[in-house]
Image 1: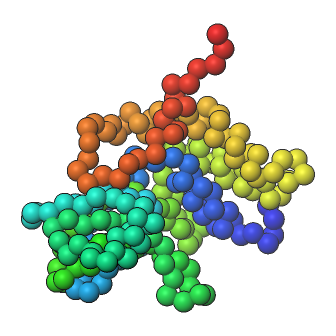
Image 2: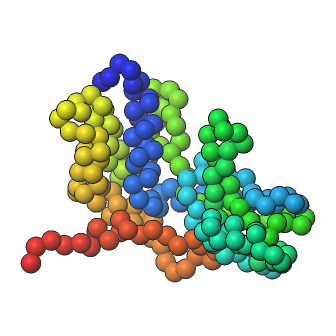
Image 3: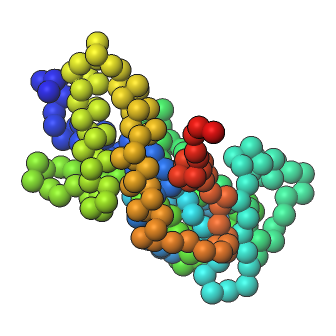
Length: 218
């Protein structure tokens, strides 16, 4: 293993990649409330935020709808922007306090809230990879993803150490097209099923679900 790349660094890189390979359902069971602040047109998101599933108002009249970042700019630039705070347009955007800070995600809002409310929205999301800090920490993946995680970790280690025998990108592409990933995806979809339409949900990318039903040959 390359001396310049500590083991924990490779483990965390592999974990981040695994969590981003598809919309894993085992990462879904996170729900929290988000507060709004008067005259502030965004909400701060949880530290472990990975991707949005849904956002809805918490036990009061009102609703939300998702827009693109470009549409949000158009809504805010309108000559007579809406002030109806019972209907919020929302989108996730990454912002930086300074040019040297890492960008962090926020939930942007239109119109701008007129009052402060600590528990205005219910926000459901997929968590991102939780970085490990110690060698003896357990890798936070379900048992059916352990083989896939080890396979991805091997790809990162060998991709850096033996790049002349196969690039990291090529190794990861092979994993994504292979049976280890497909089996983990099948297990993920059957162990936690999803039915119907989620209120306030963002449109989900189901691209990888299609590979479970793709056939080859005549």
